[in-house]
Image (tube, rainbow, N blue to C red; front, side):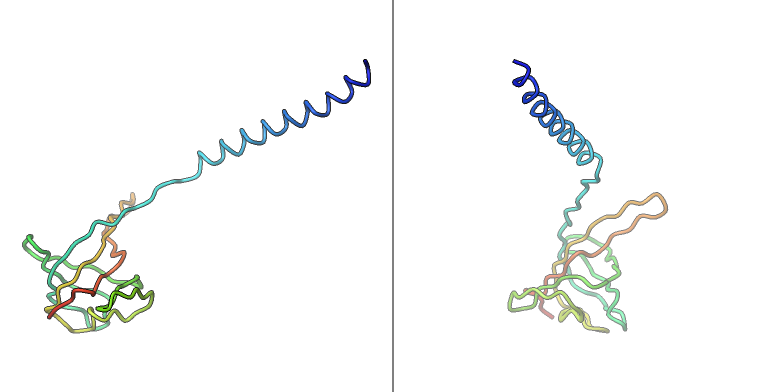
Length: 128
């Protein structure tokens, strides 16, 4: 009878250890940030692209007046529907204007500042 008790103690310790490990993992998983941002899609006619191609003004469809956005390295879709991940963006060439584009914007709200960031640009229906 003593031998059976010896064999069950290690098994019980393994089970308890696994349960404690799973609980700790579950707790750590819930403390990690899970925020994600879904970009809002806008469409409009470009009023001007900066000389460096790093900002553009746009008159948003159905809205007045226009607004401007800074532009970093973002994914963009060309007129053939192919996605690219490097600049320059075909429909936002420096000093261009008049093209109709779609783009995604994420609002960033930080205690020190608040801004809108362009997440992607779609040139597939660009005209102008």
